[in-house]
Length: 337
Ligand code: ATP
Ligand code: FE2
Image 1 (tube, helix red, strand yellow):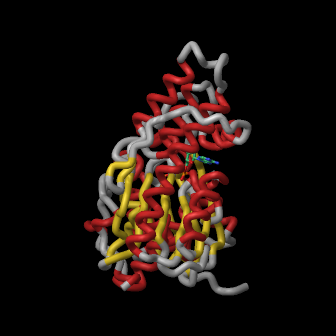
Image 2: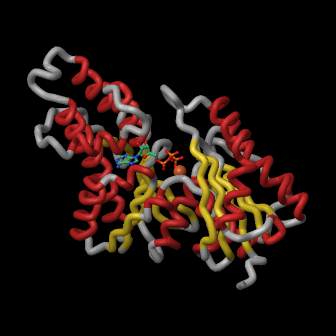
């Protein structure tokens, strides 16, 4: 059996997913195990997510190691998500990583979750220098590498796209996660109902759209002049057109030749089609990150940890504090220079 001595254990713990990835320093993946907290109703309550992860982290790590055919002694590097996310939840990953690093006497490295989404996309899609549209339950960001950093060219000013879709779906009586259900319903309609389209400069706002969509399903006209499919279709058309507009402008400005679509909302076929269209117009290669790696996972954290470790070595334990509000454009990316 080949030696797996130089494996990295990556731990994702920013929100609902406690994810563990096992991979080697060349980017070969041996396992990916996710344990996801799903609220029975409403949004994510940090205390409940924390309790869920505390109850499940050990078995998740054990399963990831055993799926990879590795023992804890094979781990040569531990990477964990140190930002951004829910403070109480980030702390869990940090404590586990700090403990493993000290018990096993192996280096430790903290990783920004948003940068990890881009890096795993670059690895899995074999793409060099993309403009990235990262759309998920917590984030809506258009980013590209420029001046030694992953710069943010556009972002949401209020709700993230996934949060907006999930919230609207919940109001319409659909179970979490709402994004895929909205997509299915939208396929049954082409009756567009006017909704607020808000792009401010390069940034996006979804809160007015959310409120207007909610009003449509509370209106007396609902069920008479239009149905839920029509509203779902109109919501998707509006918010995806907004994302496409900002992505296209960033593409024209940065003149990148590749576009990467990632995050949980990247699964949406309509959004994929719209972004693919502008890529063709601009002669850019278009890639969607494979869904297993597009959502939150420990492999992306491990891989980004490896990239930094190769450049800078491990961190001092005293430097491995969590940074719940850290933005990706605050961080240097030495492996891209
Ligand atoms: P992050 O922490 O990066 O913000 P996350 O915790 O929200 O991510 P993801 O798995 O990246 O987790 O994304 C989940 C989101 O993706 C949910 O809002 C869900 O509704 C949405 N989603 C999943 N599939 C689809 C789809 N087919 N169409 C639209 N939205 C989708
Ligand atoms: Fe994420």
